[in-house]
Image 1 (tube, rainbow, N blue to C red):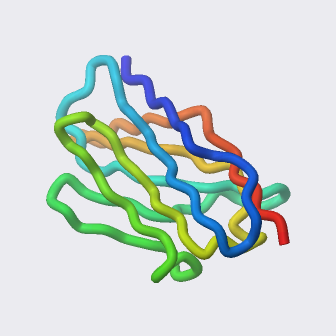
Image 2 (cartoon, one colour):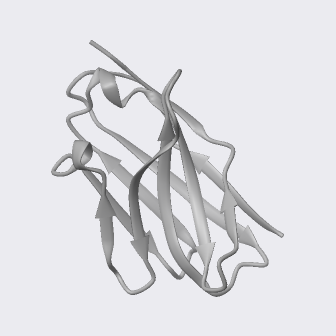
Length: 116
C-alpha cells in the first residue's frame, strides 16, 4: 500500500503564497509521475501540475508563471509552490502519484482558501 500525505494548505489573502507538500510512504517504488489536482466547489477535479521522474513538468494554463512543481525523488516528495494566489485558486488540492505500470494513488486533499 502507498500513502500520500499532503500538508501546507490554509487561508491566505490574494497575492500571497503557499507551499504544498506531499510525501509518499509505504511500498513506494517505480514512481513515474507525481502531481497536484484541485477541485473547487461545484467543479470537476482538474490537473494543476505534474512532474515526471525524468524531470518533465506540465501546468494548467491558469497557473503558468505563478505555480512551480518540484520533486525530491530521494524523499518521494512533491511540492507545489503557489505564488500570486487568486480567489479562483480556492479549492481542495489533491496529491497524485502514478507508477510506471499505471497504478495511481491519491492523497486525502488539503484545502486552500484565497480571500479577496
